[in-house]
Each structure stands twice: as C-alpha cells, then as structure tokens.
Length: 359
Ligand SMILES: [Fe+2]
Image 1 (cartoon, rainbow, N blue to C red):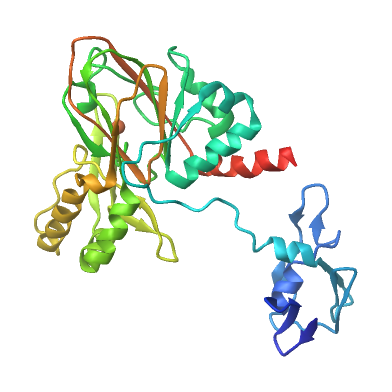
Image 2 (cartoon, protein in one colour):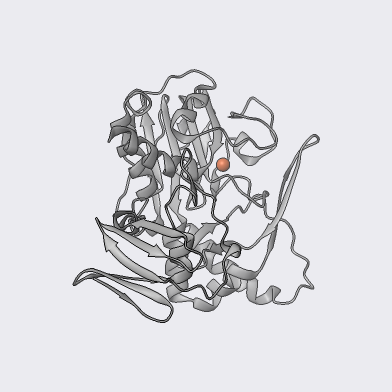
C-alpha cells in the first residue's frame, strides 16, 4: 500500500488509484492542529521553514491516515480521504450547444427560494453558459435580487443597473432601435464583466429578437481550421473604448485569452467599441486577415441561437463565453430592458456552497 522512494511516497489504494506524493507536498499538507488553524481550516505551516530536500524518518498508514515522522520530530497526519477528495472535479463540465439550441427556462421564484432548484439552474448555467429566468417581476431594479445566487453586482461606470431603452441616455448603439451585432459588454475594461443579466421589463415592439453566440465553440473551431489566425488573435492587442461626457473606459487586450493549459477562457468581441489601431503596428495586415475570418464566424448560423425575450424574462449569459445581440426593432411600443453584471466565480462556487448546505 505504501512505498517510500528517494523523493516521494507512493500510495496505492487499488489497482487503478495510485498517488505519488512528493516529500515537500507531504510536509506542506500536514493536517495536524499545529500546521492548520483548526477554526478556519486554513494552513498555518510555512513551507520555507523546512529545507527543500526534507526526507521523512518514517511513514506508515494507520486507520486510513498517513502518519509521517520528520527529522525535527514533527508528526504529520494526512487522512487518505482528503487526498482522494483533492482530485474531485469542482464544477460541472462545459457543454456544446445542440443544433437549434434555445436556452432552458427556469422559474425566477424557485431559483431564488429553493436551494435544490438553484443548484440545478446554476449547473445548467455553467454547462451551457446561458439560462433564461421566467416569471420575473416586471419591476425596475429586480436584478438586485439575483445577488442571492450570483453574488454582489459587479458595478461599472455609467450605471449600477443599466437602462436600455430608446428614450433614456444614449451613449451606445443599444439605446437606438438599430440591430445590435454580437458582442460582450465593456470590452473596454481589462477585466470585463464575466456574467451579464439582461432583464426584459417590457417588450411590446415588433422585432428585436435576442441573439446569442457561443464564442468558445466558434474560437475552438477557428483554432482547428486556422491555427495561425488563432495565434494572432491570442496575441495582438486591440484597443476598446466606451465613453460619454462623464465616463471614460478604455482597455487594450487580445480577442482570445487562454488558461495556462491552453483552454479558451475568454472571447472579447465588440465591433462597436473597437478603436482605430495604429496602422504602423507590426503585424497589422496579418491581424486584419485573422480578424476578418473571426468576424465572419461571429455571424455564422452554426454558433447562434435566436429567440424572443418576453417581458418578465431575464437572459443570463456567461459573458466571457457567450456574446449577445439584438435584431433591429420597430419602435411602435414600449421596450425597456435593464442589465447588470455579476462575477462568474460567485455563481459557480454557489453550486458548491448550496450542495454542502443540502448535505
Ligand atoms: Fe450589450
């Protein structure tokens, strides 16, 4: 079950579960009351206080726990269950949208009042990057109530809760009846909002269907078909700006950003906020070819879902993945939308929090 070699301990639980545990890892993960703050479960032990080539004097397994004695006579204990748990996946996997995808609708009140429904709804949100809440109040600022599930509102300049209608303050194409091409909001912030909730209070106008685009799917296909374009769009920084007389937002960032393992983390896209790029910049010609290709794909039917967002419905998108858009409408009735931003991590971690509460 246990074997000690030069640099690590090999723990074999059964034929398909073996862990190689480096000595420093073992010392760092000691669960005893001296090494942890028992009230908070936080780590107290400081790794630099032992030498980098530390070696155990003895290692044994008793009662499903690894016991180690170190040269300074410290006794470490590590329950094996804790090691197994560290391997567990924390969040649901992302899923591609099926053909003719329309986001699932979930009931506003049950989402807020019932923990089990909230877990299911948040899982759906993480998997597909989008949900619709139906039967929401048609009252202004109801988005504040979503904090219970999505954490505090992520405020930006302009407004805490943004009003989108043709009769209010016009600083963006969204405040006109023109079609709104696919984008995510505030590409002009280095740290763009990661969740956007769009609450339709009234939608009596003809037209104005909602459109969403799976940006990650699109970018992953681009990576497969044109790896060179993918590379350019991951590196070439583009300026974005949104402003009025009282507010100024500006950021330069590449359209595609990846995690350290290469998975796409964010697709930033906003035709309306993109600024003029210095034409003397190296690689501008190549960038524009890649940008042309990705722009074409943003309008490709393959990645889009079109539906009507009715009064009393809230469309919520994981906005670093899903772009949103609106078809043009005839301003022959009332149309009032409010939107607010939240932080994706809070939504995903609430799945864990609520599941622990139900246990
Ligand atoms: Fe928008």
